[in-house]
Image (cartoon, rainbow, N blue to C red; front, side, top):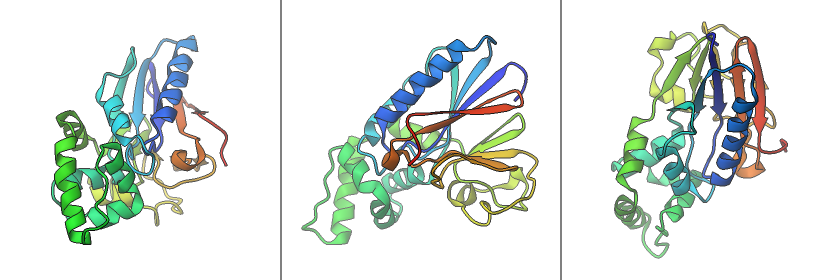
Length: 240
């Protein structure tokens, strides 16, 4: 990290507002306890919605001001892209619902009409959701950033496409990729800090740090703290 900067990168939240608030309290306390006064940067790695039952509350929280003395960057995850695209009328509804979008609908008070055909069910859900999602949430979803290069690190949701320059990475890979990224041992020029792929504990490799510890299932939401040449972790519980 550049001198005078400290980064707190937070893994996949997936509708767990309880864990997000608990982890942010730890982050604020950690920053206050450090002798060195730094620029504190909060980086959220995406997947704020789906699976957990408080997606709306998570977006409310992230649309508000960050903690005092913190700057904040919000990155795009594949689940956030699903919600964004569903609201925009893109044909992503079936896959989105299959992987947790139903919980997001319920958080906005939109139950699925199970007595309708699949096409009618999706159309009705989209129409109702468009009236329930506030403009602040829509703007947040559209404004989410794809990646953040900072110091010797690149922060993104899922990873990068090996062999492609960092400046040429595309949304599809940055929010969806697993292989060949996860098993890749090459050098991208920066260490990639990412979520997206659940591990029992943070994955620490020579070229990447993965911090998705399955918060919505395990209760363990993880943050990596990067300062100088060091890294350490904060979390809300023990890995399963």
